[in-house]
Length: 138
Image (cartoon, rainbow, N blue to C red):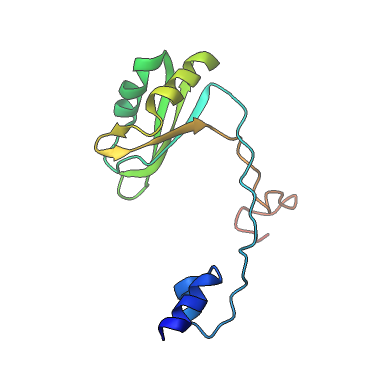
């Protein structure tokens, strides 16, 4: 058994290969990370505590520059944070300082991450036929 475990571990998939009858590929498919977002005044903040408010987010980030707008995205039913939000600074330089100052730091007991926000992509079925209702029925 020890020899079998050593042989399985040597192939790179270790325990998974040892206890599975399914033949896993020896190398994981390479996924390329998305390109870094263009520097802008809008920041995407993730890892927020569910009790974080827009006012608390604005207060924390205002230490690094003039915050034009701060918004925590909340659940419609509970009203609690969904764990992310956006902060908009007056200048790109202030936004860079906000990232440098808050990325990986604690806010209300949780480690948060700050990065430049990416522009929203269009949903795959965003175009509707002329005259149809939002539900898809005429």
